[in-house]
Image (tube, rainbow, N blue to C red; front, side, top):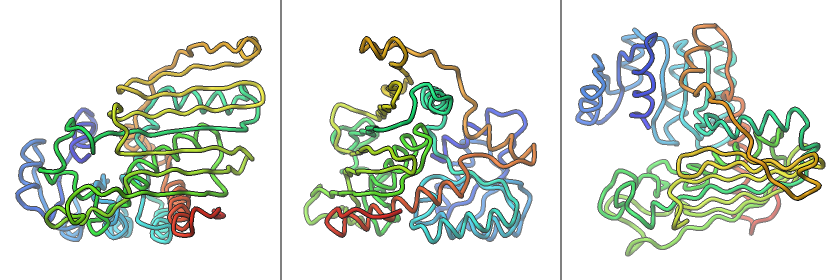
Length: 338
C-alpha cells in the first residue's frame, strides 16, 4: 500500500514526497530509491524533529496506526491513515478527538470511496430514488489464501502479518471487513446501531504457525446488522472465496426500488430497478462518472484549508462496529448494541 500511496502522489505536479519512515533500513532504502525520495528516518520522532513536511500518509500495520499518528497530530501535520483507523475504538476515538482539536486535515483511506458505482449509488439513495432503504446484502470476496496471484503466503512472508494478531492484524474483519462495512453503510446513508457476528480462523499450517507468525487472525466473517435508519441486512467477507480475486458486491432494497453495486475484476458497475422498471422486475445499467480519488481529495483539502470525508470521526465510528463484532463473536454471536 505504501507503493500505491507513493505512486499516487508522484503523479501529482503539486506534491513532493520528501521523506520515508521505516524501522527496516534496507526496505526504506529500496523504497526511497524506487520513488526518488531524498530523506529517510527510522522513526516518526526523527521525522518530526526534522520537520520539513506538511502531511503524512500512514501506511503502517493496523495496530501501529494510533501510536504513529498521535505524535504527527501533535506536531500539526495533516494525516491520511490507512484503514482500519486503529486496533480498537478507544484508540480511534482518541485519534479523532486529537485531530479535531489540532485542526489538521484527517482522512481514513477507505479506498472503495474511489469506486464510481458506489458514489453514484449513495447519491441515488440520498436523492430518494429508491425510497426508504429497508434491506441490504453485501460481500467482499478474496481468494489469496487459495491461489498465488498475490504471491504464495506459505513460502513468502509479505502477507503473513495479515494472518497474525501478534503482528497487528485484525484478520479479515479489520482488513476487508471494514471496507465492506463502509461500502454498505455509506451507500445506505446510515451507520449501524446493532451487530451480530461470527468470525472463523481456519487451520492453515502445521501447529498453526509459519516461522515467527502465529496464524490466529480470522479468515472469514459473517455479520448481521441493523442501521440507524431502520434497515437490516447481512455482510460477509473471506480470504477463502475461491474464484474471486478481489470482488465487492452490494444490493440495496428500498420502498421504491433497488440498486446493485459491483466492483469485480477491478471494474465498477451499477444497475437499478425503480419506477416503471421496478414494476416490471427489470434492472437497467446506470452510467457513472469518474470520481476524484482519496489521495487527490486529501491534498485538495489541505490546500483549501478544509476538512474531508471520510475523516477520523467516521473511522472511529466504523471501529466501534468492529469492536462490537468481536464482542458478539466471543458471546456466541449474540446481538450487540453499537
